Structure formats: C-alpha cells, structure tokens
Image 1 (cartoon, one colour):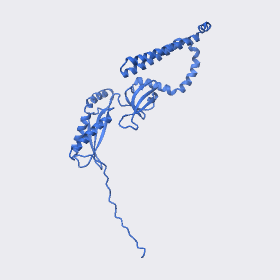
Image 2 (tube, helix red, strand yellow):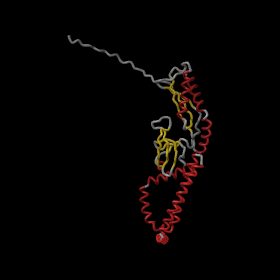
Image 3 (cartoon, rainbow, N blue to C red):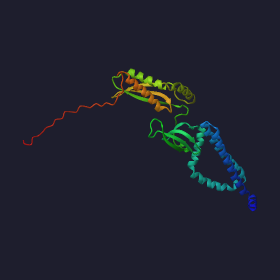
Image 4 (cartoon, rainbow, N blue to C red):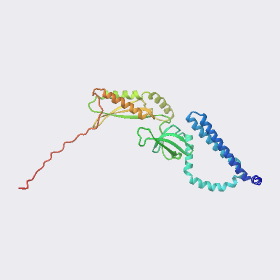
Length: 302
C-alpha cells in the first residue's frame, strides 16, 4: 500500500486524475443534497422545479471548472486526441448538441415555460418539464375532443424549436377566440334568436372581457398588431337549409369545452321556452320531381 501511494504521488498525472474523480464525486453528492433540501422545503411547485434545475446546472458548471483547474497543466497533452475524438463525437451526437442548443434558446428567448399550453408540430399539450435535452408534455386531443388530457406523456427533443413552428396558447395572451354555430330554422323570429344567443354568451363569458382587454392592451404596446375587439360578437348568415348564427367570444385557453357546454345549455333551454318563436334547424332535403316514364307492353300473341 505504501508503495502504491508513493507511486501515485510520484506520478503527477495519475494523482490529478484521482483528485478530479474524487472532486466530481463530492460535487455530485452536494448537488443531490441540495436537490433534496429544495424538494423538502420549497412548497411552490414551479419554484421547486426551477431551483432543482438551477442546482443541477450550477453543479455541472462547478464540475467542469474544477476538472479544468486540476488538469490545466496536462491539457496540452490531450489536445490532439481530444480534437479527433471531439469531431467524431460531435457528428455522432449532433441531435444531442441540437437539443442543448434548443434548451439554450428556450432559456433565452422564452418560447414557452413549464405550465404553458403549446403545440409542437402535431403534438399539443401542457408543458410539465423542461430538461437540457427534452421537453415533456402532457398531451391533449387526439382521440379526445375539447382540449382535454388523453393521458399520454410525450417527450420531445429541444432541437424541435429550430425545425417546426412553436404554438403557445398561454404566453402573452392567455385567452383564445372561440366560436359556436347555431342553426335556426326558417320562419323563426331571428331577432329574438339573436337576443337569446347574445345573452347566453354574455352571461357565460362576460367576466373574461375586462381581463382580456387589459392583457390585449399590453400586447398592443409590445407588438405591432391591430386593436382587435374582445367583446362578444354575433353574426348571421343564411344557406339553403337554415339561418346560421355565429357567436364569437374570448375564453380562457383551458376552458373552451366547459364554456361551450354552458353556452349551448342556456341557448337550448331558452329556445324551448320560446313557444315555438325560434327553433333549432336540422338538415332538410328537397326531392326533385322525376320525369314521366311511359312503359309499353308488347303482346307476344300478335
């Protein structure tokens, strides 16, 4: 044992390698301890996740600088080898490098954050975690309608932000414009129908209007966009089968399904109380009269 220690002490490179390994082990355990303390004592979910990631990032930076500091005298010996190996690794791990670059872009540009509802390519859902390599999304849609969770958790490489558009439903303006279509049969009191639909939409979505106006005013100062109206709007069109009212309104991006349900429930209830003044339409078909067909029967005996 004494001979081994003497040999290690006499070999400067081996000594520094062992020192680096021991230092990295200590840093690793300190980072784990910090993450456990953060989990135990931080109650806010978002702050806890962010601080855990900060602890890991700080640990990684400290580990890199510690290794460079210990091995600085011997870096020249590895320069050529590291260059050759680095080129091969860069080619083999180009997707990983792209994901790290995507994470840096996300950190600087704030395309989205944990808790945002996004669509990355064809995948839509709520962001539940962002790591150096991947973004984790709780998916909505697919076989489930109404922007509801379907139960799948999807992990997407961060390099995706450089390849496809990123749709954010909740960043600067956490509201959506939504529409409902109400078919009303011909012969109905269309003015009364408009009144019913307008009242139902105002009752359900009226509380969103002041919040949306305040948020939209901030958008106008930040971006060059038109001063769009966030007030509910009712329009009427007619086709071969019915009159169709379209109700347009703003709604919280997570409340589309329940808001539509509440509006339709009020409208149907009021239509039923209208004593047939208004009624919902259904598809009708007009059968065109067929031309007269003459059939001549020939007697075989003549």
